[in-house]
Amino acid sequence: MRDDTLAWMNELTAEMEERRKRVHRGGGEARTARQHAAGKLTARERLDALLDPGSFVELGTFVEARDPELNAPGEGVVTGYGTVDGRTVFVFAQDFTVLGGSLGKMHAAKIVRVMDQAVRVGAPIVGLNDSAGARIQEGVDALSGYGEVFARNAIYSGVVPQISAVLGPCAGGAVYSPALTDFVLMARDSAYMFITGPEVIKSVTKEDVTFAELGGAEVHARRSGVAHLVEDDDRAVLARVRELLGYLPSSARERPPARATRDPVDRRVPEAAARVHPDPRRPYPMREVIKTIVDDGRFLEIQPDFARNIVIGFAHVGGRAVGIVANDPSHLAGTLTIDASDKAARFVRTCDAFHVPVVTFVDVTGFLPGVAQEHAGIIRHGAKMLYAYAEATVPKVTVIVRKSYGGAYLAMSSQDLGADVVLAWPTAAVAVMGADGAANVLHKKQIESSPDPAATRARLVEAYRREHDHPFRAAARGYVDDVIDPADTRRHVARHLAMLEGKTVERPYRKHGNVPL
Image (cartoon, rainbow, N blue to C red; front, side, top):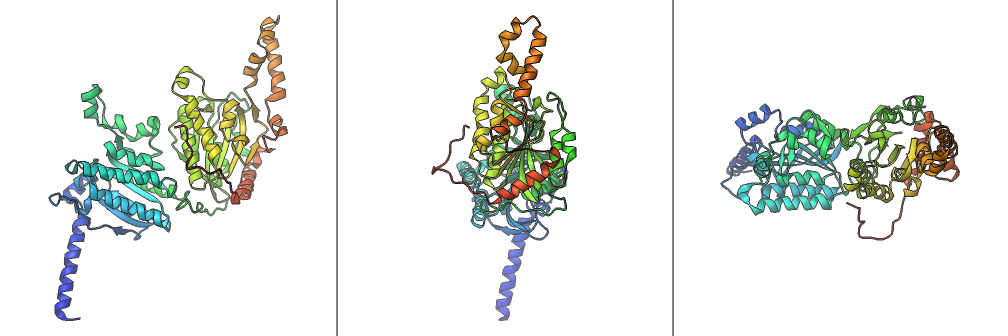
């Protein structure tokens, strides 16, 4: 190579590297210091924490804002791909040090490009959100950018896993992209999500509320149900994202990855039944029952603080990833409510989209009665559970632990709604309602006219219990495939999941279903 050509090339390379350094500096040292003082990592530090060491490959490094007057290195977002446990993942990380991470048209274009590439190659999309919202200087162009992102969130739903980590502010239209994804994780003290901020709310409704009270992580974890998981800080959130990805396939064309375990698949679990109180009216810790049955006692509960009467989460059984749905008698007696129905239905549909088998543990007296639930639409929301289970084509194994009554019996993955295998413990009871209620309905006049109503009622309750309040009547009708020793639950579940691994289901042609939203 000629000396003048080499000098020319070195000059251009030096300019390129200087431009790259400028992009990597983001908003500069002062703003980076403020980010750290707020307990937050920078966009690039977050990517380092999320991805396998040295695996990140940046795309769109030198993209700039449309307005050349704006000082926006990298357009306020870092995009590219890397690996998590050796599997390819596409990522974008908004940089709050650059114009508050605000989204402009080219900022959105960078995000859209990695989303499109993720779908082309079949890999998850992880978004690290830390943004003040739409870039006001760009007006409708910024809104158009959001629209392009939202459209892809919707169209790619169920195609590849989409996970949102909210690690800072997420306001206005910015909240809808995370809300459209499969899972939302939030940092406890630094993240918040809301449509309109405290100042606007105060001016319009006169309500005085703080950022945390309005849209903090705890609010969305406990009350709104927007957040699926909350962790203490950025690093904890990103570690949880890595764990969550381990239960999901790279795309809907694949099966979830297996996990190696030394936990014997035929391990007996006598401790499972020991945790269940023999009195059907008494609570017990369903989460502890689940942990005795799954591999190595590892259970990643999703939305643990929202609608606690239903438990959802991921585990492995015999190395296979499974989604768990269970009633929790420790909260509202495990009844199904509006929030519980939404929570379970969404989770079942997510599992179905990504080939994760669903194992359901049942102990339910019914849908929660009351004027408030009826007027708020328990019929419509409860129907979501029926729809989700009936629509799901993944392997479905149901274990009736104790009670399974009325419409809730159907909603909790009954054979009639497509459960492949229904097992019951000897402690189970499958009926329209419990013996106490049934006796009152069936024999009301006889009880009232009896010279000793209490004794008559007790006798009729016991008679109903012997006739109906057990699993063998349902087993005799074929609604329960087997009544098993609780200590053998793990072995039975694992065996049935192995049998169902090659399950295929053909559905009638349709454009799409119409879930009762």
